[in-house]
Length: 443
Ligand code: ADP
Ligand code: ASP
Ligand code: MG
Image: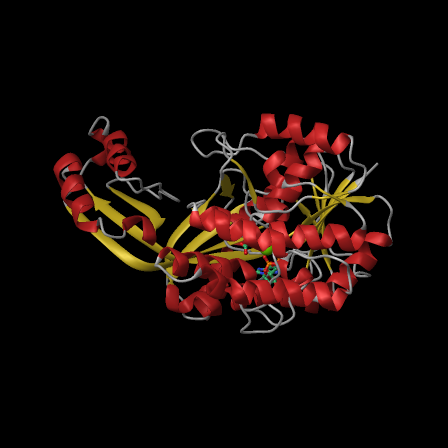
């Protein structure tokens, strides 16, 4: 049985972190497949190598000299190599990257080199085989991840490679060019590799001791969630809990492989175990976690006897689809409908969209309101308990926070509230206090 271990950028930010990573891998010989991110921040206002590479690409595209723009990246990698004391030179790789920049290999190619180069260093340091993700992770012609081909090819390669380092974040298009996943995508690569090798466990090593009930940048010292289901995790990560990329549960979920989130800087901590629904113990608190995101807008439509206008919703959704806008939520009243969308999807097209909607759905009143934040309160425990919503609303109302939207999924796994962006942090804190601190006090 093998385990797949993914290390995030902060876990591989410098040589000191590389040593911790090697100790972790060597402590368990089942840790056979390693997914590195690019070196992340070493201190608060440091720059991640991925961001340095995007910057370098933009400079070179604007006419700057490659060697000069690439120098800080080169220094960062050479610094790690020399501090680790390994016999490795990346100079030929740097030259190749320069050539590929010149032949317009693209922005994704540029960004992916952080993981690629870090993978070469880590493989050398561990004595593992380096397997380029472009050889086993594939996208289709439309740029969508191709799970079937990837699973077959990567599975075959890793079958004959007992210990390997596979860089995260990228794969290859059918024409061989490099494409990356969205930011934070090494988590997804780890999940894909875990599925391909039929791992017993996918360990995701980061800089916190597990999935926390709330974002630690908002709530001081939040509780660690010891066990969470894939479905709960999906809700929380989709709603902004940045620990795991929102798509990373899909490959492992279909193969029933648990994920363990662990802390590279405190490996003895148990972390968070993510398991399929049906195998989880009862949750410790009524809620499992709280997450949220800012920058939503509400398209608010009023029309008398809306329900009697045949095809009203279809026409409305069609206009939105034609503008590339995907509703996040759609709370409805008898004569009203509010469509909550990501504000960035409206950028540069609010006026055109308004015109078209007025023309097609002929509303009595129409308005687009910006500045909405959404907060999701998630928990498998709320299915069997009454009064969860009441407590969310009470917490917000005591804090004088106006609720602008409410939505509860039919799975009864979450309650979503829309509030003004300015109240975002305060709302998360008071919901945390209401459910976690007060339940702790009762225990
Ligand atoms: P990595 O570089 O290891 O991939 P990330 O920065 O992507 O790590 O994710 C870990 C960070 O996610 C933490 O340092 C923390 O600031 C942030 N975070 C946001 N919400 C949560 C949460 N609910 N639990 C734990 N960490 C969270
Ligand atoms: N290095 C990439 C990023 O910064 C991918 C990752 O870290 O998962 O987004
Ligand atoms: Mg991450």
